[in-house]
Image 1 (cartoon, rainbow, N blue to C red):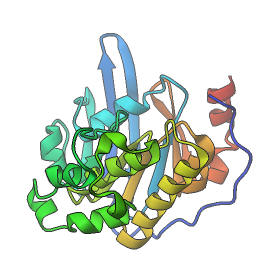
Image 2 (image 1 turned 90 degrees about the vertical axis):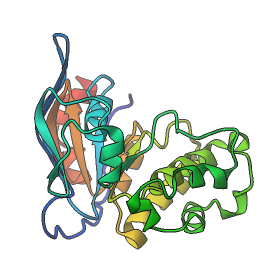
Image 3 (image 1 turned 45 degrees about the vertical axis):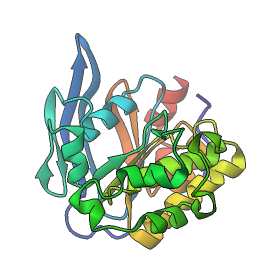
Amino acid sequence: MSAPTPSVPPAPTPPRAGGPVLHLRSVSRAFGGLKAVDDVTLELHEGEILGLIGPNGAGKSTLFNIISGVHPASTGSVVLDGRDITGLSTHAITRRGLSRTLQDHGVFAPLTVRANVEAVHGATRRSRAGRSVQDLLEACMLADLADTVAGDLPHGCERRLSIAIALATSPRLLCLDEPLSGLNEEETSEVLDLVRDLRGSWGMTVLFIDHNMRAVMRLCDRVAVLDRGRKICDGPPHEVQKDPRMIEAYLG
């Protein structure tokens, strides 16, 4: 991965009202003798966009999988809106208000854009009470492509469709796993604008993993850095990118 980015101005951080939407308490995950995630404690408050970064092999994807129920934590706990979700299935966690995109985007290529969103919309009590399919398509700038087969979409539109599918469950917390991977500059800007709008207009809370560090630093209110499974620093982007521990992790 490239070296840390040049300094950027601090992003406005929303007020922290009440308790955290997500609270990780001393979370670890071992695979055999390897600790992929090691004693990570992290909070994400309502309306925040939190970036999770780190060198290859730092444990980001494993932590994402623990949060969303793909892997159980070996030790520690994951609390969503004050309720312990540690060890619950992915479906149970979705019903409680957490949704995530996948690195392979999770799009049903043979179906139309609208059918992709409809396949998930209404699947839970939360989503039935949430926004309509048309609202989701319009929010993700896909209304004009509703009848297009998903497999025919350009990469940027496909990525926005994966976000629309995740939103179809009416989440309180949206987890985006490398949503900028493979996108050109224009497509990247569209996805970043969408995430900003979801926070601004919908009050969405977002956990954001990506290798595009410049984009992460410009988008996120706060950034947490993992290295060798441990959280080494956590704070506003303009502070984190100057932190010697972060610089050492990427350049060391």
